[in-house]
Length: 310
Image 1 (cartoon, helix red, strand yellow):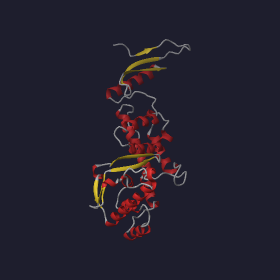
Image 2: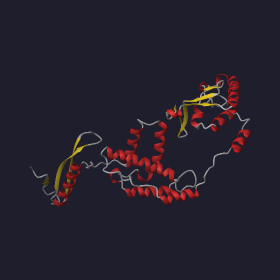
Image 3: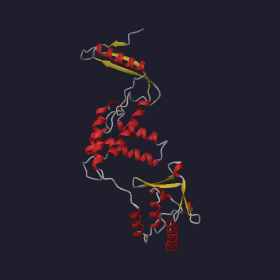
Image 4: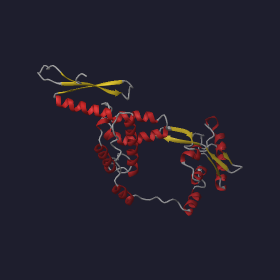
């Protein structure tokens, strides 16, 4: 068997160097076999690196060097996730990871360390806010936790695809002190009691949107109220069916889809107050349709403006 490490002829400066070429396995991005060429100034360094690579290959933990940055990998990961997730979920993932990109995005994926992630987490908790609340203050524990969870998911996938040896964020977590500190200062919003609900109903009884407001008091999610159609309401039987949602994504794009789960598809009884409000609202829309003429959009949705626009 030939010696794997070759001594190279002196270069123009008279330096003697040592080189080896080793089978580095399959490139996870192209699927092709790849050879790794390494050159060193000393035979000792060449032997040490050759031994390290062959040992890692034997263990099945060798990872090919690559120049992919954290940003580039997150882009690839989100594209893969988009095949299995709703557009709104992918959008939320993207927004959540945007909190990570500014500090860690330009770091080479293989150079990322636990210290990088820890430093980002402390910064996010202490002074990362740029909008909402006071600029320069920290994000809430829940927001940072969500970003950290998505980063861990992305790095786990990088390990699976052979881009990383380990997930350096796997043991990073929000300190207990930070969680306790937030609980002490966070204002707890209490749900309305029966008296407060009654006062709200009285105050809004003449409002054009009384019926949609009452639907929200029934426990319908905002996306369910926005996606509700008249065809899904049976005023005679006093029931309504939930099968559709409409959500604004990034304050620009409306996404319409079925409910998130089978449990979300349900038929609910209509209390008499809500039933009567819906009857009034449907009559109001009929008058508005006549007044608008051809300018009325329609579409069958319950929650529309005076021109039938959603």
